[in-house]
Every structure is written in structure tokens, then in C-alpha cells.
Length: 449
Image (tube, rainbow, N blue to C red; front, side):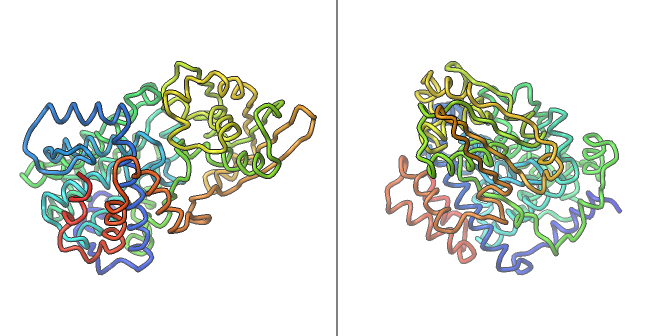
């Protein structure tokens, strides 16, 4: 069976009418959450820098750039919005794929949907399709590709963005195959060597932009490989289980396995953060009480976020991907949000001094249960030699331990409050809650400029 062709066939046939009610509800959750992330990031220094770069670049005003008061060509608008998705590091993701599908799929779908005057139902189908394509490819290649230094937001994200964009362009099967082929050919390498620099958010934008370009080029008759998914998976893992790409296609939707984040940091830190917050609140622990903290985690978390010790000169990316820093923030501020990754907070030496007391250890038993469980065990020893333990197997936000609608709305409101007034916030919420009733997705994007 050819995975690329089967995915293209599925993509062209999928319609809103095929989607179960629980999938519709999850799409709304992901869209509301993602728009909140982009609005929040639009006020950041790097978010403004990227938006200004695209504004000066100019071009045809095809699609909305979130909270920037201008429109840009499709690929450029997607570049900005995809980068915004990656800045706060509180976007949704896939536990067993190591990917943030929303970073490429939702910006591309918003831009192409606005350009095509697509209905809310067509937009929903495109988003579900994008998540589907990203999730299935990522499941085959995770965690090896990440441990080998390739970040799937960039390397896989274009496939999902191309599928979603192609769906909204109403590509036929042959053109959809080419869109996937072109996306895989143009995808960014996204190496970990640059991941911890301030350029990191760009790979979300580039993935969305590439997906848009791939679909547009395919619509013009440019051809791409009909074996691109096979080639990508083989290149990443050698002998991939390609059956996973098409298994239960149309029966089990990948978006249902998506987690939503309560904290502004890498998902690998969330088990440790949650356990720490529970302990400091239960025992009213203060930074001055702490003798040391031991965090036991699985291998992938230990390698990616466990041994990173930022300092006062570190970037926001460095601290988002550090268990020592985020645990220290949880103890000090009893929160890990946008304030904790601000320049002022990062430059506070006290939080870094506390972070030095946090030691991470790989626990073989936790490694065995990953990625089914992204577990962490936190042991805090106080100056009075009291020991407090907490284990988290399934951090908050996982589909098996989900955020409630009210928690998602609260997160959205907090994210949007610095940019929008209460009336605008409620309008966006109401519009997304009725997404399937929209005659055109512009009824949503008009609130986002």
C-alpha cells in the first residue's frame, strides 16, 4: 500500500459530515486555544519583530496577521501566525508524536480559508485533516527523529499544512499527492542545534508557509513525489511501520489524542511542574525552605529538558526547555506562565540559584512507560530535612486528564486580555463555539486583526 496516495485519497474525500460530534468539539477547543496562543504571542518582542519584518516586506493583502492591523500574502501571513504559535510554548501537541500540529495547520487553514471564503464547516474539515496527516507521520517517526536532532514541527508540519490548504483549495487526488510531495521536498530541516536559539519560533511559521506554497504550486500543476511519506519515514527511522500511517484512517481521528497545555513550557516539563505545584501548595513551601529537589523522569525528557541549566543571559526558549528553571519557577511563583518566561524574570538571579538545587535523574521504569505516560516523580527535601514526594503519570491537559472547557476559556481570556477588550474576547469565543455555522471563516478572522 502506498501511504502517500492513500492519505491523498482520504484527504480529497473527507467532509464535515464524516466527523463525529466529539471531533467537532475537540476542533473548537484546539482552535480557541491556538488563537489565544497567537494573540498572546503578538505582544512579545520577537512576535512584533517577525510581524514588522513581513509588514515592511509588503505584498498582496490576502490574509490576516494576528493582532497586527495589516494583512499579508498567504504564505507570509502564515509565516507570522505560525511563528506566533511557537513563542509562548503553550500550544497543543501530540504525546506519541512529539509534534505541535497546530503550529502549522491552524495558521495555514486560517489564511487559506480566509482567501477562499471557506465556510466554517470546510475550515473544520481542513483542520481535522491537517492534524490527521501530521499525527500519523509523527507517530511513525517518534521519538527517534527528535532524539536524532530533528524537530517534527518543522519537518512534518508542512505535510499537515499542505493537506489542510489543499483541502480548502479543493484539490483533486492527483494535485493533493503533489501538494504533499512538494511540502516534503521544501520542509525545513529544523535541527536541534538552532532550536534553543531565538529563531526557534520560525520553524512553525516556515512549516505553515511551506504548506501554503505547496498547495498553491500543486494547484498550478507543479508535480511532487507520490512516495514522499514513505521516503520521509524511511529517512528518519530506517524501517518504519508504514501501516501506522493509514491504520484506522477515517475511523480513529488523531486530533482526539491531542493534549492542551496549562503551562508555557515544553510538554516534557509538565509532569515535574504539576508535581512541584501540588507539593508547594499542599505543604506551603517557600524557596527559603528548599534544601534540594530531585526530579526523576524518562529518557527523552532527561535529554531534552532535564540537564539544561539556564542563566540570567539565557533566552526565553532556554527556560521553556528546562526542568530546573520551570521547577524553580513553580516553587518561587507558584505558576509557570508568560510572566515566568519574561526577560525581567529570566534576569532575576534568585530563580537561577534555586534552579541549581534541582537535579534530574533518568528513571528506567519511567522510560519504559513512555510515551504512553509522560511521568515524573518529584522529591523535595527541606532545610528541616523533611521529604515530600509526588508522582504524576499523566499530566493535566492529556486527553485522559483533560482541561475542561472552562479551563480552556480561562486560558484564552488570560492570553487575550492584554490585546483585546472583554467584548472582543467574548465575540471570538462565541464565534468559535458556533464555528460550524459560519458562512465564511472571515466572520472569525475579522475579530483577529
